Every structure is written in structure tokens, then in C-alpha cells.
Length: 170
Ligand code: AR6
Image 1: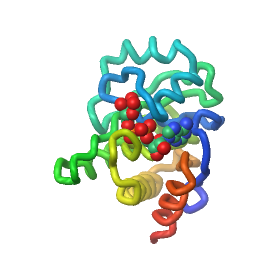
Image 2 (image 1 turned 180 degrees about the horizontal axis):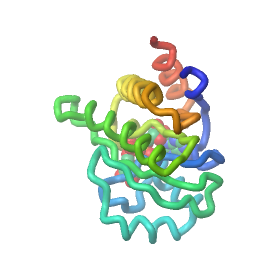
Image 3 (image 1 turned 60 degrees about the horizontal axis):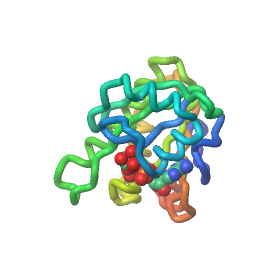
């Protein structure tokens, strides 16, 4: 199990994995943050494909091609906006991770990389989000043998430390 979870620091758009996950919005409209970076690196065709998907409710996931990215696929998920923790944010964030993994497995993908969904513009506290991410990924991998590797990608050094701490918990 431990060998199936990896952690890197850097730009998710550079990873040549089967799928990278995009922290999108419910409309799947172009945004900033990792969404902007992914769309820039993928090229305009990804916007066109997203336009035809009809959005993505919070916690759900949708798949598109990766176009000019090294990753073959992009799995878009809309994370919850942090409203203080009493609006079901934890469960919605857990749904994001689980539904991305379900979609990856359904498509026979073996490698998937996640950014820290909801922890940027959407304001979800990073340590709490990292713990949810690790719990969901571990639970999924225990029950699935399609996905060989899940990579957590941290953009900033402090976010990498936060994720390392979450991964160090049993
Ligand atoms: N590679 C990896 N991680 C990144 C990258 C990158 N290139 N760029 C940023 N991050 P955010 P959210 C990290 O704000 O909070 C968009 O406008 C970033 O440091 O991208 O889910 C969407 O369209 C942070 O740790 O996503 C939505 O409207 C993490 O990615 C909204 O933002 C997530 O930050 C979604 O907000």
C-alpha cells in the first residue's frame, strides 16, 4: 500500500502520469490556480471539451483528454468552498478524491496525480484537507487493484510538509 502512494513537490502539469486531477469549478469554466495552469498547458481544445460536459456538481468528477499535456487524461473535480467546516465540506472533499479514483479505475488508468483540491482559492485548511485526501486514497487502494500509483503533488514547500505529515500518520 505505502509503495502505491507517492509525494512530489512541483507543477502537476509536468507529470507524465495517466491522469492528472484538476481542482475545477462546478461550471468547468476556465479558472485560475491549478485549473489555469492545466488549461494553459493542455491547450484550447480542453476548454472546448469541458464546455460540452454540462458542469460538475461539487464532489463529482469528469474526465477529458489531456491534449498537449504529458498526461493522457485530465480528471476534473469541483471541490467545496470552505465555509468554516459546518457545511459538509469534509464529506464533499472526500467525495472528490473517491470519485476521481472511481473514474480512473473505470477507465483502466494505473497512475493518477492529485493537487491539494480546495486548499487554494477555495480556502480549505491544508492540514485538514491533506488528512482527508490520505484517508480516502488509502481506503480506495485497499479495495482496488487497478490503480498502481497515486501521487500527491504539492506546489509550495509548506504544502509539501503538510502532506508529508498526513502521510506519516498511520
Ligand atoms: N501544480 C500543482 N499544484 C498547483 C499548481 C500547479 N501548477 N498551481 C496551483 N497549485 P486552487 P481550489 C495548488 O486555487 O482551491 C480555480 O479558479 C495550489 O497551491 O488551484 O480548489 C477553479 O476554476 C493549491 O495548493 O484550487 C475554481 O474556481 C492547490 O493547487 C477554483 O480555482 C489548489 O488551489 C478552485 O479552487
